Length: 278
Image 1: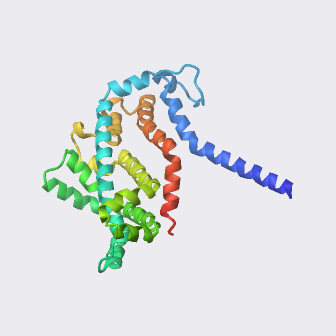
Image 2: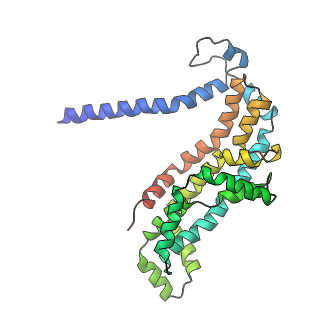
Image 3: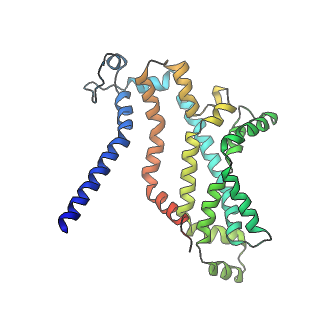
């Protein structure tokens, strides 16, 4: 019996190790390519899985050939403002569906959830026409406003809020606590892992956004890193300088990787709490 368990564990860890290698190899290859010189990369008829002469010149080129630093600042502004506005909208909406009683609440919530079945691609044209007619192209307002609403995040927060005992809400109302005060003093602290999860997922979503920023901005002053990487490919390094391109991609990926590593426990706890009720 013990031998079977030992063999089973060995097989499981072997498969997990193999899968980890498969998943992590593209990141290793990206990092390896970014420290190879342009000449050495082009002379490799058979790709090498290591290099004896790493260089950081590609990283210098990433910030000198194109305004990558400006793209970073634009992305940080877009990400922070969008995430803050999303939380300002999603938290009260989720609280209303979870705790407040009003006529037709279930019907409204069902209709609200039905919006999740509409592919986001179908709303791009409508949003583009609306933002263009309002004169908000090539502006942070045009970038941010269509991204501050998310049915999924409201649903995730609502399920987490519903897991808080209703007795706390009733006791707070007896003490004369307003709904707004109860929401921020009780509900948000108790459901902090879910709130943090929503914030991190939105940050990742904003950082990786490409279709909408590419469509609504044609002025380099408002390019995000996702759009800027294409600009780098077309007008910066050229299509053949793969090492410099990989250096730019590494610089763009590092903040998200660090964010996930720092808050991975909060993300897992938030998703688990959002999926359980009671």
